[in-house]
Image (cartoon, rainbow, N blue to C red; front, side, top):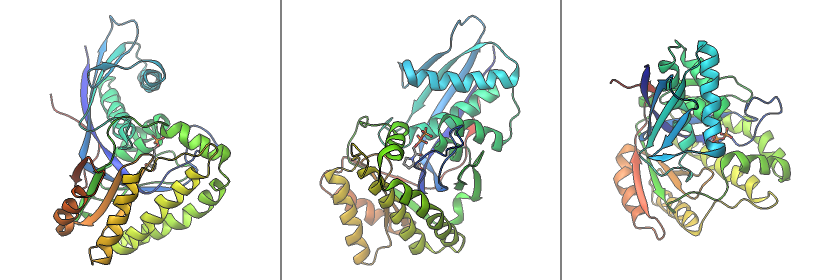
Length: 321
Ligand code: 2P0
């Protein structure tokens, strides 16, 4: 019986992916740029068992069924095809952060599944091949194969690492404003935006220039310009969501209060910049030396339930044992 355990960390996009390309295969319509985070980890064990008649999937101790299970089975089917294997698998996955809440659990989840699964099925895949398999399951997962600063270009087959985790000395202060699952998942949310938002074409046409600005600022270690481009990307993405029919409103009152607090911190001379994904939480990028004061400020903001501070993290990997 072959088995493997892998860990993968979540990633936060500074320049966002929101929209699928017309060429299909879950390729992205826009380029994205992300940072892999040390603190948000998924650990997944894949165990092959010839006695199983179908794949068994469990997340945080609960059986995964329906569409969520089918997404996992599709990845396992691809791995079996590549390896010429037939055995079904038992998949046990654990997140150390709230699942389906806008903290990108699908990114770390599918990256960990692909890495554990390819080891269990005995495939010697390159990182680019693992990234491509992850992307087909969930595009943001393509980026979590790599550590540090990663890009996934529009239409690309796989993501690639731009700079290592220590390229900038910073922390991400995550303000969780609501615990529990969100109302509309990312996949359906972006399809709804794409199909109905009059602002979606503007989002797609603005995204490449924003991506180039952010990438240049990152290369030059120009944190304020990077932060500025990051804030523009998240607000443009949310503008496209808000203009969807029906509107996609992931932002909560507490989300806006945190954004306001970040603007005040900047006015007070603290270099802090905010980003949100398809959820109500706010992730604030700050130079490491500022992290304790920003953490305290966010803990003291109304509606903030929990604060997690993370440094940049490494790529997905097979765990020992
Ligand atoms: C991102 N998000 O770039 C953007 C920003 C959410 C907002 O990638 O349909 O779960 O599985 O490819 O990767 C979340 O979308 O979507 C996401 P699918 P995914 O991080």
